[in-house]
Length: 237
Image 1 (cartoon, rainbow, N blue to C red):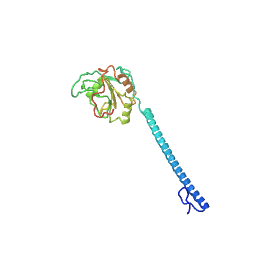
Image 2: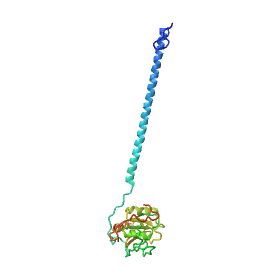
Image 3: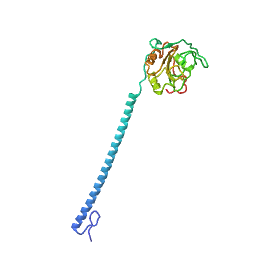
Image 4: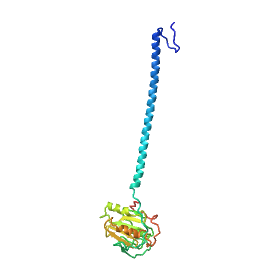
């Protein structure tokens, strides 16, 4: 009877052959061990590459967010800040001054100036801001009564670059920017009982006018609101 090995495998009767069989089994076990080790190392490397990829993606996204924040700070125009005017436009060349009433009325009003610089007006004021369409005179005049400055332009002769240049000069509140077809000059800047006509948006007198009349203490109601009332069609901001 042929003896068997302790592992349960049939032993060879030839010692040399048996030694070869034992060596072959050991090599197979070693090969399997190396194969498992190699697979484990491949999985580790795969996870490592995945972590690196996500780190790169996360870092890139983080840098992109930082870049956007920095760009927004750098390229966002800062709000224009000017002191409150005293209503004295004597130092602004070309300013015309008028005397107007300030009564609340219903219906349309015929004004002596174009655009109007004051006079009877609707009980509801126009919310200050930028408009892409003409706004009602009777409401805009009420805003002038509150100390707003109304910047108007003839859309037939003033292009968008000029409109943008006008907008860049204006404080974020207590100003109205709107088209006004047929006005006597390409650009007309109005406050309560005061008006300036200019040809170009880069005329330095626009800034001088703003400093004299913006939220002027000479307006009938200089502390009244310029929001919370009427948004006319074409309101942009």
